[in-house]
Image (cartoon, rainbow, N blue to C red; front, side, top):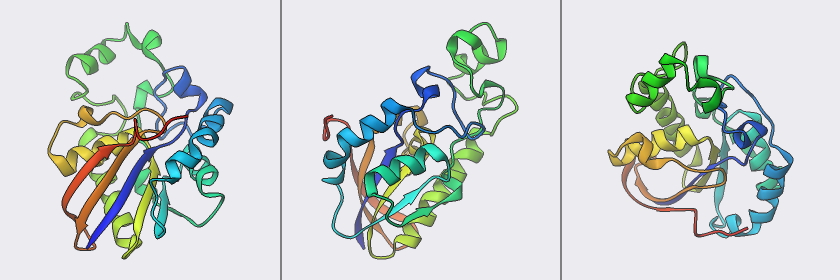
Length: 202
């Protein structure tokens, strides 16, 4: 069957505004500017939604708040595996606080391949995110689906579906991808995709 899937990164938190690593260990709420941005772009984002769309969401506050602003507290299905990655020792810190840390320099030098010290392994996070995405496909049935999650989840899912590099799919807050997929109800058999950014304006 063919269906549309929207992958949207949640709106900004205070940690996002300070360019901190905000992962599974920091259950931040949206900042006021984040809430304002969702409200300002709501009508444009909802133009991407078909009349039969099920809403799925990470269990973290920032994603749930984004989904509730967009969809007015309608039924939101929580997918536990779509929480953000655990950034380990980098959690809650930004570049200025980490730049002199040799573990962080190693992380940068390997383009993230060295992983997050005391955090979640990248390969484990990618598998978990793909499992969460597959769960949403199964639960959506014949309907389209709209997933509010995290930047890491989007990179994990998109890189797995396309075979391209994880970091090719970085998404800013309230950005992501529109997927037109062919599915057997469990997994994606074929897809085309487009970036949300540029399709909406605040």
